[in-house]
Image (cartoon, rainbow, N blue to C red; front, top):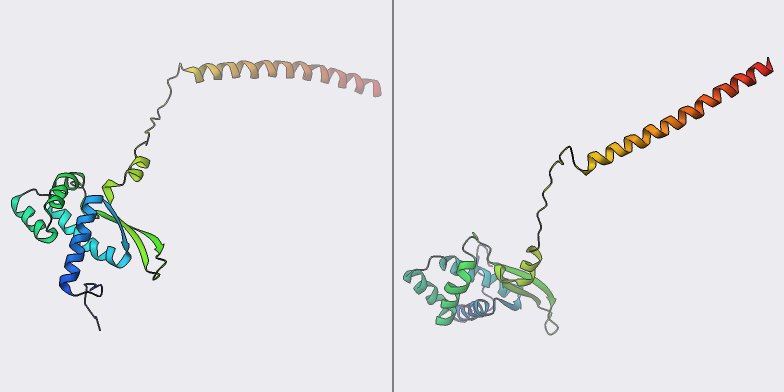
Length: 180
């Protein structure tokens, strides 16, 4: 039974698992996104996110610590040079797992794990946000002139209505006198 064991062993011995996670982390740092199974992606997320946090402070000690996990000079330099400045303001959550469906061969659940700040498509959708300014219009603007013309039209209509009403009562008084 695996009660309380927080590490997914992925069906491998510890040396094989560490080597596999190191290779996957190198690929993720180099390509910014890789496709793998969900179980491996979740294990990789717990492996690579502390390394990215460590890369925010560029010191010899942190470089040596990260190198002890990755064992690849190019990946370490890319991590400190490219990835760390982009995630400097982020407090965590450097990776995103997007599920892709099931693999045909063995029906394993597949996903894509990517570095969040390197997805150009999602960043492009956020870029064209426009801010609108709403303010009250001054009294002498176009809307005031429109209101004055509307008032003139209403007063003209009222004048025509009163002339029609004036003629109607006279006709009605004539009718009542004729009937009487």
